[in-house]
Length: 252
Ligand code: G3P
Ligand code: CA
Image (cartoon, rainbow, N blue to C red; front, side, top):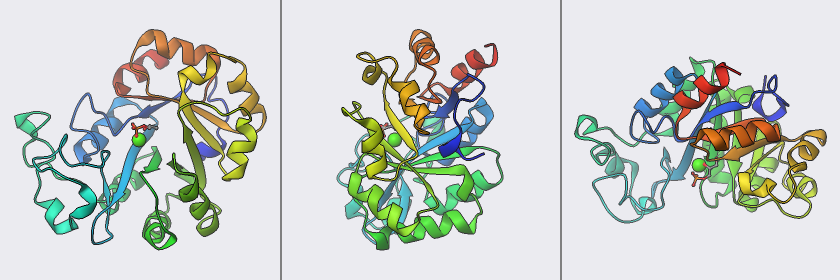
C-alpha cells in the first residue's frame, strides 16, 4: 500500500529509518540502507542533492565537511570527483572508502526489498533536474512505494506538475495555522513535522488524518518521545534508532 495513503497502521506508527540506519553505518550510504532494511524499519528516509554535472546523489548536508574527507559545497563537484571521496571514515575506520551513493544505486536496493521510501529533495529543483529522479522511480517500478518530500514549496509544485501520480510530502518545522489548506496548496498527501507542532493542539494529527493526510513526525530517538507520538496517533516516526523503535513497536 502506498505510504501516502496509508492512514493509521493498525494504531502503530511506521518506523522510518532516518538516512538509513545511522546507528549501524554512516548515514545516507548503501550500508546504512541495507542495515535499515535489517532493522525492521518499514520505510527508508534519504536526502537527494544534485552534483555540478547534474547527477543525483544521496547526501544530507550542503557542505561535504561533516561526512566526507573533503570540504566545501557538494554542488560544486562533479559525480566523478565525489566518487573519489571517503564518506565513511568520519564514522569509523572500518567504514573507510564507503562512497557517496547515487540515487540510481539506491533504486535496485529498494526494488528488491518490501520497504517504502521517503525521498527528501534538498533545496530547489527545476523540472529538468527532477525528470531523471521520476524516470528512475518508474523504471524500477517502485512508484507506489515512494513519497517525494521537501521543505521547499516550489520544488513540491514542480513535482506535482511533472509527476502528479507520485505521492508528495510537505516537511514543516511547525504546522501553519491551516495545515490542511497548506498541504493542499502543494498537492501533498503527507505532512512531516516535529512533535512540537502538536503541543498546542494535540488533536491536530487526527484532524489532518480525517482530511485524508498521512502524518509523520521527525526525528525521535527516545522511548518517551516515541510514546508521545503513539499517543498522538501519528502514522509514522522518523528515527535515528530504527532497530530500537521497530522492537518497541513490535511489542505494542
Ligand atoms: O524527514 C524529515 C527530516 O529528515 C528532515 O530533516 O535535516 O534530517 O533532513 P533533515
Ligand atoms: Ca531528510
